[in-house]
Length: 163
Picture 1 (cartoon, rainbow, N blue to C red):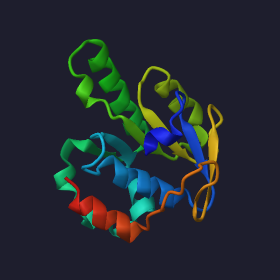
Picture 2: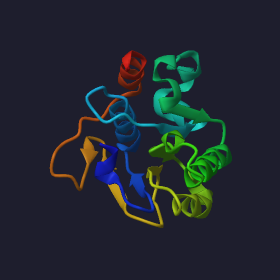
Picture 3: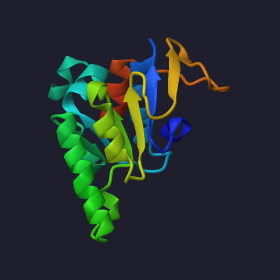
Picture 4: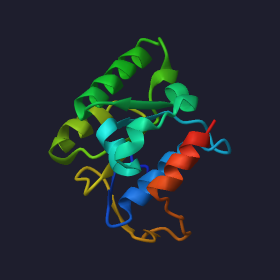
């Protein structure tokens, strides 16, 4: 599902349904019926999407497929390390394929990081370097097919049961 919104320099998501769509994309990334994905996001963004008690929940079954870092800077550092490994041929499998973030004033740094990577970047808020999709409370406005958005409780339940 994340590829629906993919753009080489990332895409923004804006509107009342943004968190619901990001939760739905996160769930889809770990759905056994889809291509396996590696996801990167900050702890604060994960807590924003799933609620403050998310730290009490464990997603051990997702293993290395879900990488949660403390800060946006940690995410960028993680991606730059993986890009270096990929260039040196050490392990392309370590590179997350989906980056969910809320870069805010750091959009320029995030954009420069994305320039050398082959991943889907979905960013909360308007995105100055690519399209910004308007996400209504009941789903994305631009898509012809409806996407059912997930609540935090649904996301936690489905992610806890994934893989």
